Image (cartoon, rainbow, N blue to C red; front, side, top):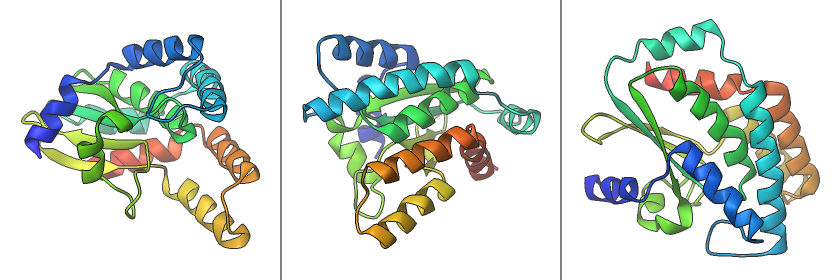
Length: 196
């Protein structure tokens, strides 16, 4: 596992590098990942807008900040992502806010399709679901992992799929509305609870 983690970290991006890379691809009419389509480009463009908004509006409450400040060892938060993924667009700015709040946590981002071996170690029910947050200690050992979405958001999609048989555009809209109303609080609370 250590070799896989080190290999991924060698190809990783900082948050700002990730944002710049995805933006450049969009200007070139491309999305991240192995597959290219008009839909994936459209989702990438939508996510760029979402992330810009979240960077300006996300707030962290004092309780979350206090819990993060109790982390007294160096950590790396490695996130498996793709620019076209709506959940990534909602979660990554939250992780950026959290890691920016403390000095000893570094945020790194890797692309799923370029890190298949890593992704294979962190499947969700056999699927390559993203984002996936992998929390590493100072020796790059896995402390814990989280993702691809908060429990309530996961249940929203599972319930919708059980009722309608598919995850279609109305389901995606309902999920984005859930994220908008939640303002990142559930994600922050789940991650902090996992660290304690």
